[in-house]
Length: 128
Image (cartoon, rainbow, N blue to C red):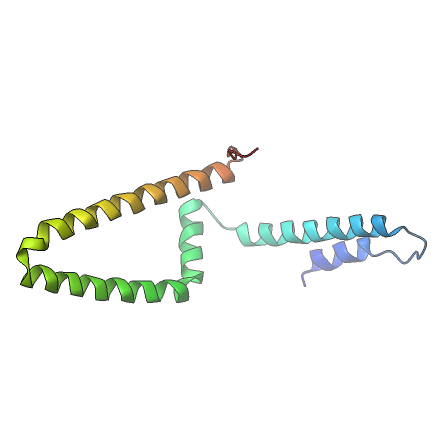
């Protein structure tokens, strides 16, 4: 636990047994929010832009990403062999791949736009 977190916890711990439970609950929630915000601030220090944050997140999640890369290599090899042996399917396969690629590209662009809006506090959810 960092010094800031221990200081926050020391300030919010009440030794008075007569304090109502709701007051203690509010103080504890406030302390947890402060700790969470301190952790976010510590993590966000040194981040220059969204791109560097995404690269770091990708690095942290590399163990989950690696199986997808292997799967991608296998699918690529299989498609290459299919196209080699069945040249009549080449146009259909490439058209389908292009369609899926464009869909993924659009979804990624939407995700980045929402991430930027969230970081700039400009994002409004459609439900609120």
